[in-house]
Length: 303
Ligand code: CP
Ligand code: NVA
Image (cartoon, rainbow, N blue to C red; front, side, top):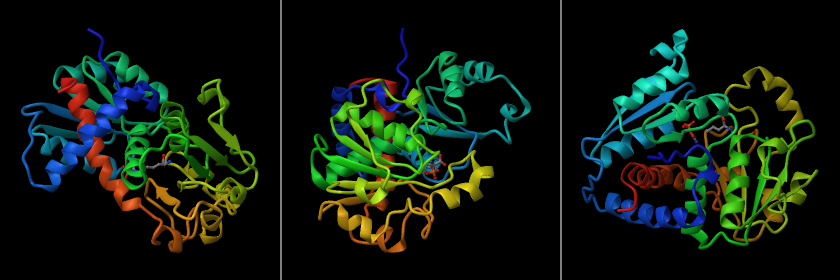
């Protein structure tokens, strides 16, 4: 039997996303109505964290509980992973005791190796190269606020990081365009994008990238695992912030998104992130709802 993993945004098709978006809407409504819904009764999610987290842990743990199941939190420090147990061995053991596993780790190769040895579905809770659950929540949030994202323009300002690569995959799946502006020396790694580059355009000037955009989004200048580069990045990224001048270049009803945690005064001004175009709290909340739909789908299939 082939197991369906969710390691990258491109692991699901448009029709699967359409199904999941509908499920997420229904599951969200049940949550808002305090209506119990326990399709994963007696099922267990194992969560492996090799990096810090607030939203990802909370949304998966609360989500699994709300679906009637249990979530177990493991981190590198307190498990044998921190003492050198091979990832392949950990995957075999964990997947014999659980129904689904979420992993947050460093290199994407680690989660691929883990998935190859897992008997149960594996979800990417963030790697250095991808953060599909967050971008799924963001696409869902855009659709909730503005309707279809097909044909729209999303502007990415800042680092070519895990969030950007997941946005670029989402653009191919959903049929929208990404305007990307990264500082010199922090360009897109073309090995991480598909050979068809028609779904994104690169801009040297971050303000020009915002022209007419329906959504402007950014992320931290220094992602987890790159902390030693922090001082150099602060200098290089100084102009790659989202402020009101850049938002003025976007469409008048443009949304602002940030996966959080944010650094006000660095990649985004307080005026923008705390302003009327920002939907960052909806994005964070929607992690819960889309991941519940994903957990249900990966464990039980179409219901
Ligand atoms: N956005 C996101 O994944 O947040 P955490 O790092 O807090 O999980
Ligand atoms: N790009 C950030 C996202 C955090 C949710 C990081 O990888 O640290």
